[in-house]
Image (tube, rainbow, N blue to C red; front, side, top):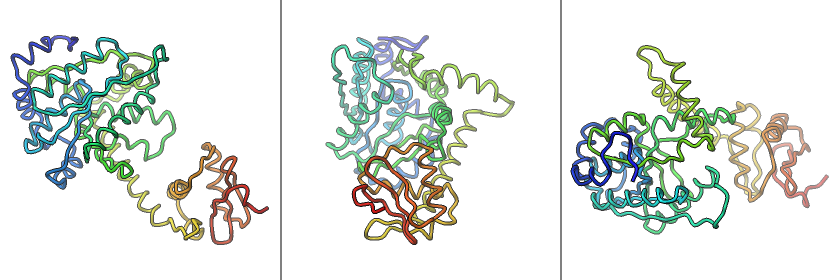
Length: 361
């Protein structure tokens, strides 16, 4: 069983430093007030009998997260549930991850659910998106069956920096650049994702866990250049931190602050867009409130409106911007294709979404 360089073997750590004691020491090093304040506010309003789930990979982030929840909220221990998804991509190491998580949860008296990804034999290496989708499908199923209200994940400041840099390369706006969020409701599934470690960087978490006598699993696939996030982590982020280094400046803290501010901007724009979205009983969008909206708000209104229709579009970025231009012009009778099956049509007072077969020319 592999461990971080310089750490005792896992079995030795568990034997000499029982996990409850490790958790108590870690909680002293990382008190509640160092966790993200938005998550602390959510917890303060959370019903005491709600069940919490923790995404537990066995890596340093998720191990620290489980230990801190166990130590800081002892009244919740009986309702904690750890979820481990075994991707099965690293042979015996993947199985060792699951066994490590089982030892940890057993020592803490925390329930654990494990699922192994069943992929066709000989299947190609999955993409990062495919692996994430499979993992989250397991989380949704496990939480739904047990009526779990919240899923805690171990994202930290390094994840904020990596995500922001990756999404800048894709041309994301405030909504994309403000991920991962400390509190992220998922109303469709009736749960909330919580990330209390966004105020801490990975090096600090590793140092604190090591000092407390704990161990964790290292995933060798995290250094593979096959995935964009790994390349950002190994090459771009260190170079950026070195270039941005100045006395008294913490580059990761700066990015985390930018994420917080982008989230505030995104929330304000969403409120504005909601107020400007006026849809009648036939699903037609009122045109008048849209005429003088800032483009960033109009973009959200149109995305929000189109999401109400059971249609598939093939609009790329250029096509969507063309649709926005058409709505701003407000020319009665103008129309814009949404793909093979639907059009947007402008009337004197409305924006309408119509199937091709009923659109009159």
